[in-house]
Length: 385
Image (cartoon, rainbow, N blue to C red):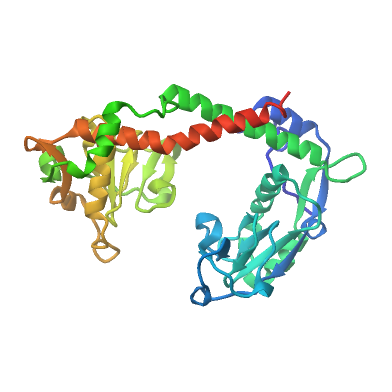
C-alpha cells in the first residue's frame, strides 16, 4: 500500500532542492518515519446539523459549513442546543472540497460535515503538522463518492516521524514546526524591512489625509480620458499553455485571477496596471503578466504605485455592482466608457492625496502584521537554539 509523507523530503524528491531549506530538509531525511493508517490516529464521525435560519446570534460558537472560505466558518452563532455542539480540539471536514480545519473552540455544524477526533494528545505545534498531513489526503477523498469518504479516510496510510519504539515523535514534530515557523517569520521580517513596510508610524501628512477624508472634493472622471483606451487580452486555451514563469490572468477571484504560469509568447502587460475581468472585478497588478480575452487592462502605469491602487479601488466600486455577469460580460470597450469618482484639486485628479491616503491605510493594516512578527520572533528565541 502507498503512503503519503506530510512534507517532501530529499529522498522522496530525488535530492532536488525544495521549498524547505537544506538544514530542515536534512532533518526530515534523517528522522525515522513510521507508517500508520488514519484510523489508528483519528476517528471520523458524523455531526448533527442545523439550518442557518434556526440559529440565534451573539455567542462565540462558530457555525461550520462545507465552504473552503474563512476556515469553513459561515457565521458566529448563539446558543441553540447544548447536545449538538461539537467539542473543541477536533477537525471539521467539509464534504465538498474535502478541506480539514482545526477547531479550537466548540462549534455547530451545517450539512455534510464530518468531525475528525484525534486519538492522541495534540500539541499546538502538532496541530499545524497534522492539519497539513490531513489536507494532503484531499485528492484521495475527492476521488470517491461521498458515501465512501469515511471508509476511504480510515484506510489511508500515512508516514509520520516516530521514535525507536514506533510511537509518534512529538518532540521532533514540535521542534520542526517551531523552526519552520521561525524561518518563515524571519523571511517576513526581512520582507517588511526591505519594502519599508516595517515602519507603521503615521506621518503628519498621513494623519491629515485620514482626518480630512470627509472634506475631500470629489469629481467624476472618464477612464479613457485619464489613461487612454484599455487593452483586451487574448485567448489562450489551457491545452495550449506552456509551463513558465509569467502569471496568466483570467476571470475569477481565486488566486487573484491567476490561472496559470506560462512560457508562451504572449503580450506582456506592465506592472502597476489594473485588470478588470468579465464580471467587472478590478485588481491591481504589481508585476508583469499576460491576460486572456476575458480581461481588460487599464493602463494606470503612468501613475505612482499607491495612486494606482487607489484608482483600482475606485474602478472596482464603479464596475463591480452586479451589472456584469455570464450573460453580460465586461470588455475593454466597457472600461473606456466607465466613469469613476476620484478626489480632485483644481478640476484634476489629486493623485498626491490618493497616494498619501493609501500609504496611511497601508500602515494601519501592516501594523498588526509587524507586531505579530515581532511577537513570534520573541517567542521562538527560547525554542531555537
